[in-house]
Length: 290
Image (cartoon, rainbow, N blue to C red; front, side):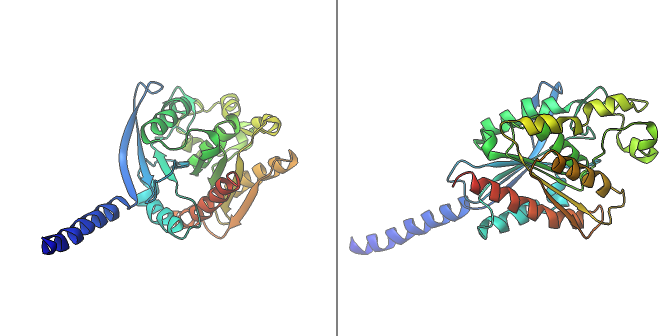
């Protein structure tokens, strides 16, 4: 009888150890979906979950650029590897990352592409947080994106500061309000994909733009922390709009972090800079729990 116990106990212990190790792995779930009444259909998203899920997780909504989809940040941006490494190093707290498919919508409500602003704010965020049990309030919710996604992240955070604790743009496609058609190139109008009218409508662009929201953001009782980063060799010249946004925020006495780094409008730059964005968000989350 004693011999039998000797063999049974290590077996049970090994099984328990195996189950614990199996459950303690980071996970990337690709192309999940939520029903979106705003889009009269479904909205795809990919989801990163860290190894440590012992506590309620904060969440980062991470937006792709023009021509992209919900898998870009993993297949091209290596987000799972970067986030897992930083969490293991305790450089950032464990967090979930939600990467929605924004099509070419610029993350606004438009006749051309549908009600994507509503889809994110009213459908994706409440439903993913309900299903997966992370986030839940602005103190544990951030939003960031690259290029078109940077425009979307800033626009959503500036217009809805009660929803996000942090916002960041990587090479964000930012343009101050336009005075005339000559203020924007034909190439850029093509990149707008009809979001701001066909033909391009300056009045509609300025209505949808977020520079006019800076004064209301200044008056808000709670504002998101803001991180701006752009390459000094950006092939589309987007450093100009990013600098303009930085200057506008400084004039309004709104705290902002600005970084101009060495690089072009490429994934090589964004794979590097997303690490700094994650570290920044981690500091914001840690500061609000101390």
